[in-house]
Image (cartoon, helix red, strand yellow):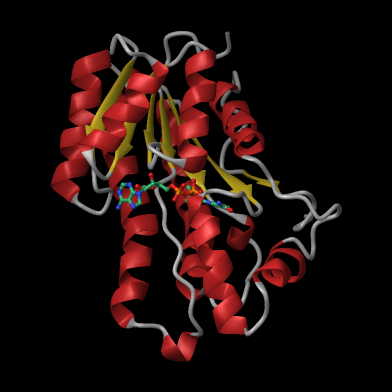
Length: 259
Ligand code: NAD
């Protein structure tokens, strides 16, 4: 097992990509803290991994709330004694053209993706620095490297995560902490299912065309990336055995973006 008795905190892990990362890390022997908006959702996901509660804990955490983040991370340490891995994954999507984008929606998206990454990183580092080790993984996107119409705050935030990861890689090195970014293409989670009708309306095309001509147009094979694909990339970063792999980003997108 590649993560035997490591402790992983995963935000936004009640659903989609975060939940699959939690399942994958648990299969590899990790103890899992599911951090998500409400306690019931976090508890249900944690119970699906380990009904006994010995190796999985649900914590209610709005990642934009400083007190909730610090409290949730403290609960993780109280339960399992350490934090080896943070996956900063919680996120939302809102689509609209820039000139029509509501300021409150812009701020909400940036706050969840960027304030959330900062607050959870800061709390995790305080524990990881004491341990002298840790791995932080940010959930970026092809939109950390590329732009799409209608997604101004999302593209801005996802590009920003690469900058944060590089700073954390530099500062964390002396403490044995690595930071990296996984950059998936489109994955059919609730976040994407919601966008299909929204983009069809904004662009005046059918939902089928949103999938074929917008979302998957640039892939090499017209395929969605899966939650399992993304979880394997996260596992690669989490289980890497030396501090050589840091400050990097890995695109998993059926060739939509090549570098
Ligand atoms: P999802 O909607 O299935 O899951 C997102 C989770 O985040 C939910 O459980 C939600 O409750 C939680 N969340 C939202 N706001 C939160 C907050 N303020 N505090 C704590 N939790 C919060 O979406 P997903 O597709 O699994 O997305 C997960 C991450 O992957 C996001 O960062 C997203 O940007 C990124 N991503 C998704 C895709 C894709 O195509 N689905 C592609 C690239 C990157």
